[in-house]
Image 1 (cartoon, rainbow, N blue to C red):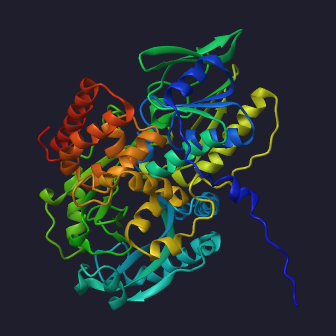
Image 2 (image 1 turned 180 degrees about the vertical axis):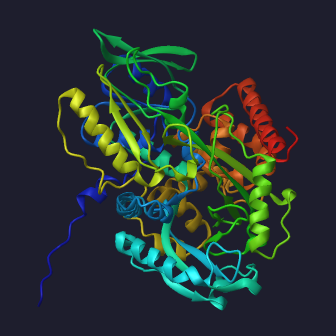
Image 3 (image 1 turned 135 degrees about the vertical axis):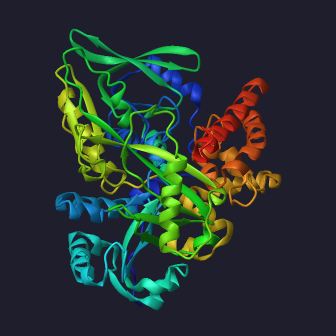
Length: 556
């Protein structure tokens, strides 16, 4: 009889899967800020700050992550949601960035398989007025081969050349009279807000103190060296002691950098990008479709997400209020005109379901087009020990975090190895995306949002079946997910739920506003909030969506 060795649970995977969900008590987190001394305090709860907190916690440092609003409430919930190498960076001659981005793409695919999924990109070849015509198709295929060889092959499939019928099978609304064929290559996508949240929660799982609604008002110094920050949170002012302070506020570095008087501020150039959401039934695409925009050299994209399709993006300098970035009527019309020029569809402003506007934190001086600025990042350490990280992109956030913690270590006089290259995010360890999504239904919906932590949402449903109702009519998010977000994801407000824990605001802006009172009622019960606070949150959310719609439709 043949005897086979007994297998044991894989330690790294087993360590990340718990029988009970991570529960972060807000009062405990705030108390820890005022009573403990930290090695590293990170200011900014976007994707870079969250990954930096996770990296530092995995290296064994005592770390705190502080965000003035909500995790990913800035640029990190308003990106293109693409995890990619970037074909245009090859066109810029920045092959090292592309090669490294593609490596980081696969690390994210491995470490967060529930949140980062493969995404096909379709480029049509048109006989005229295209991104390129048939005469340039051979040159473009050379570009795709370069992309594949630079790291695109890691996805397990190379680019493909398609005939006209194949292109129409992926997007039947293409105007066929000018269509010669196309190319398809492969990258990935992620719900950027949930990816950032997962990073922050994973950092907490590994021992970090994390807190949203915690605004850093000042960086403190003693003897000419950084020694902490002052935080305003929950009507309190807290003095947080730390040996190193990391500023990871992205585009907001333009307005406040925390630097000492003699330090040179980095040159930050916010570049605005917008997306609009339209009913998928209008487009009927099963991949990301790249379309030409008349009068513009950079192409636009249309990406399917659920029953909506996102159109974007723009790339222009922005000098306005970074806390109030919105898609304007002019920008919406620009994107709609592009879609109508390439596709056979009846798409009007009234069809737009929602919109987002955000700012890329470009590291560049004024002058020239923002689209031509390279997406490299910069990390600087001032003489007083303040570390600043800015620039880069969503795809390279892990690597940026690694280098940022390396810089913080030099201030500390320490040297500990980075451990994030193969570190799973909560919900990712042991998750089989293909098996879960293939089953469809509720399992697929929850799987793509929570991974192996989906069971904790269904536990809530088992305890209270009345929560098995959609939050917003026509969207898959359930009331049980609101309860889970309040208990385990540090959601504090109606806006946290509808804008970031779910993506109801961009998918169905007006319907989400109608759902705000019910979300408020669930939060009031779960967080024991006064009715006056909930009423204010509901009114504030409705005012935000009204303001957003007015700007979009040109009423403001």
